[in-house]
Length: 167
View 1 (cartoon, rainbow, N blue to C red):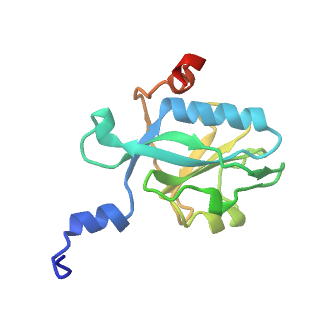
View 2 (view 1 turned 120 degrees about the vertical axis):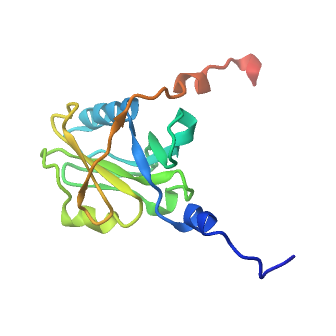
Protein backbone atom coordinates (compact mmCIF):
# COMPACT_ATOMS: atom_id res chain seq x y z
CA UNK A 1 0.00 0.00 0.00
CA UNK A 2 1.37 3.37 -1.00
CA UNK A 3 1.38 5.99 1.77
CA UNK A 4 2.90 8.93 -0.07
CA UNK A 5 0.09 9.31 -2.63
CA UNK A 6 -1.27 12.86 -2.94
CA UNK A 7 -4.66 13.51 -1.40
CA UNK A 8 -7.07 15.62 -3.38
CA UNK A 9 -8.21 18.87 -1.78
CA UNK A 10 -11.78 18.06 -2.80
CA UNK A 11 -11.64 14.82 -0.83
CA UNK A 12 -10.22 16.59 2.22
CA UNK A 13 -12.96 19.23 2.06
CA UNK A 14 -15.65 16.52 1.80
CA UNK A 15 -14.20 14.62 4.75
CA UNK A 16 -13.15 17.42 7.09
CA UNK A 17 -14.40 20.74 5.75
CA UNK A 18 -17.58 22.54 6.70
CA UNK A 19 -20.65 21.10 5.06
CA UNK A 20 -22.73 23.51 3.04
CA UNK A 21 -26.42 23.51 3.91
CA UNK A 22 -28.66 24.45 1.00
CA UNK A 23 -31.85 24.63 3.07
CA UNK A 24 -34.34 22.76 5.22
CA UNK A 25 -37.22 20.68 3.87
CA UNK A 26 -40.60 22.33 4.50
CA UNK A 27 -41.93 19.11 6.07
CA UNK A 28 -38.95 19.02 8.45
CA UNK A 29 -39.39 22.53 9.85
CA UNK A 30 -43.15 21.97 10.12
CA UNK A 31 -42.52 18.76 12.07
CA UNK A 32 -40.11 20.53 14.43
CA UNK A 33 -42.51 23.43 15.04
CA UNK A 34 -45.32 20.98 15.86
CA UNK A 35 -43.05 18.98 18.18
CA UNK A 36 -41.97 22.17 19.96
CA UNK A 37 -45.61 23.18 20.42
CA UNK A 38 -46.42 19.71 21.80
CA UNK A 39 -43.49 19.96 24.23
CA UNK A 40 -44.38 23.49 25.42
CA UNK A 41 -43.90 24.83 28.12
CA UNK A 42 -40.70 22.74 28.16
CA UNK A 43 -37.93 23.21 25.65
CA UNK A 44 -37.74 20.89 22.67
CA UNK A 45 -34.35 19.67 21.41
CA UNK A 46 -33.21 17.67 18.42
CA UNK A 47 -30.31 17.22 16.05
CA UNK A 48 -30.54 18.25 12.40
CA UNK A 49 -29.61 15.64 9.84
CA UNK A 50 -29.57 15.85 6.08
CA UNK A 51 -29.07 14.24 2.74
CA UNK A 52 -26.99 15.35 -0.23
CA UNK A 53 -28.78 18.04 -2.23
CA UNK A 54 -28.17 15.95 -5.36
CA UNK A 55 -30.74 13.44 -4.01
CA UNK A 56 -33.33 16.17 -4.69
CA UNK A 57 -31.94 17.22 -8.09
CA UNK A 58 -30.42 20.35 -6.55
CA UNK A 59 -27.15 21.13 -8.30
CA UNK A 60 -24.09 22.65 -6.70
CA UNK A 61 -23.48 20.25 -3.85
CA UNK A 62 -24.27 20.62 -0.20
CA UNK A 63 -26.97 19.11 1.97
CA UNK A 64 -30.68 19.53 2.57
CA UNK A 65 -31.86 19.19 6.17
CA UNK A 66 -34.39 16.38 6.05
CA UNK A 67 -34.64 15.00 9.57
CA UNK A 68 -34.80 15.94 13.21
CA UNK A 69 -33.24 13.26 15.36
CA UNK A 70 -34.47 13.22 18.94
CA UNK A 71 -31.74 11.80 21.16
CA UNK A 72 -32.79 9.30 23.85
CA UNK A 73 -32.49 10.56 27.44
CA UNK A 74 -32.82 14.23 26.43
CA UNK A 75 -33.76 16.19 29.55
CA UNK A 76 -36.11 19.11 29.15
CA UNK A 77 -37.51 21.87 31.34
CA UNK A 78 -39.08 25.31 30.72
CA UNK A 79 -35.60 26.88 30.71
CA UNK A 80 -33.33 24.29 29.08
CA UNK A 81 -32.95 21.05 27.16
CA UNK A 82 -29.89 18.86 27.56
CA UNK A 83 -28.74 16.16 25.17
CA UNK A 84 -26.27 13.46 26.12
CA UNK A 85 -23.62 14.16 23.48
CA UNK A 86 -22.24 10.62 23.59
CA UNK A 87 -25.57 9.39 22.15
CA UNK A 88 -25.42 11.62 19.05
CA UNK A 89 -24.45 9.62 15.95
CA UNK A 90 -21.10 10.71 14.55
CA UNK A 91 -21.50 10.85 10.80
CA UNK A 92 -21.60 13.42 8.05
CA UNK A 93 -25.42 13.53 8.08
CA UNK A 94 -25.27 15.60 11.30
CA UNK A 95 -25.66 19.23 10.35
CA UNK A 96 -26.49 21.01 13.61
CA UNK A 97 -29.18 21.36 16.23
CA UNK A 98 -32.72 22.62 16.66
CA UNK A 99 -34.40 23.63 19.88
CA UNK A 100 -37.19 25.78 21.20
CA UNK A 101 -37.33 28.79 23.45
CA UNK A 102 -40.75 28.65 25.16
CA UNK A 103 -40.38 32.35 26.05
CA UNK A 104 -40.39 33.17 22.30
CA UNK A 105 -36.92 34.78 22.21
CA UNK A 106 -35.39 33.98 18.81
CA UNK A 107 -31.72 34.47 19.60
CA UNK A 108 -29.16 32.17 21.20
CA UNK A 109 -28.45 32.34 24.91
CA UNK A 110 -24.90 32.08 26.28
CA UNK A 111 -25.65 28.41 27.05
CA UNK A 112 -26.78 27.86 23.45
CA UNK A 113 -23.56 29.35 22.10
CA UNK A 114 -21.54 26.84 24.12
CA UNK A 115 -23.23 24.00 22.22
CA UNK A 116 -23.07 25.55 18.74
CA UNK A 117 -19.47 24.48 18.02
CA UNK A 118 -20.63 21.22 16.50
CA UNK A 119 -22.60 21.52 13.31
CA UNK A 120 -23.10 24.01 10.53
CA UNK A 121 -26.49 25.48 11.38
CA UNK A 122 -28.54 25.80 14.56
CA UNK A 123 -32.23 26.62 14.60
CA UNK A 124 -34.14 28.25 17.46
CA UNK A 125 -37.94 28.13 17.45
CA UNK A 126 -40.10 30.32 19.68
CA UNK A 127 -43.64 30.20 20.98
CA UNK A 128 -46.24 30.20 19.52
CA UNK A 129 -44.36 27.99 17.00
CA UNK A 130 -45.99 29.27 13.83
CA UNK A 131 -44.39 29.16 10.38
CA UNK A 132 -42.24 32.29 10.91
CA UNK A 133 -41.37 31.67 14.57
CA UNK A 134 -37.83 30.40 14.02
CA UNK A 135 -34.37 31.67 13.12
CA UNK A 136 -31.16 29.99 11.96
CA UNK A 137 -27.66 30.70 13.28
CA UNK A 138 -24.15 29.64 12.36
CA UNK A 139 -21.76 27.99 14.82
CA UNK A 140 -20.67 31.41 16.16
CA UNK A 141 -24.29 32.38 16.89
CA UNK A 142 -24.60 34.86 14.03
CA UNK A 143 -27.90 34.88 12.13
CA UNK A 144 -27.76 33.00 8.84
CA UNK A 145 -30.20 32.42 6.01
CA UNK A 146 -31.79 28.99 5.76
CA UNK A 147 -34.14 28.53 2.84
CA UNK A 148 -37.25 26.39 3.26
CA UNK A 149 -37.26 23.95 0.36
CA UNK A 150 -40.30 22.22 -1.10
CA UNK A 151 -38.74 18.79 -1.65
CA UNK A 152 -40.33 15.36 -1.56
CA UNK A 153 -39.19 13.34 1.44
CA UNK A 154 -39.56 9.60 1.78
CA UNK A 155 -42.69 8.69 3.69
CA UNK A 156 -41.53 7.59 7.16
CA UNK A 157 -44.71 5.54 7.46
CA UNK A 158 -43.31 3.12 4.88
CA UNK A 159 -40.56 2.16 7.32
CA UNK A 160 -43.18 0.90 9.78
CA UNK A 161 -45.46 -0.57 7.11
CA UNK A 162 -44.87 -4.26 7.66
CA UNK A 163 -46.73 -7.22 9.06
CA UNK A 164 -45.72 -10.21 11.14
CA UNK A 165 -45.34 -12.15 7.89
CA UNK A 166 -42.54 -9.78 6.88
CA UNK A 167 -40.55 -10.78 9.94
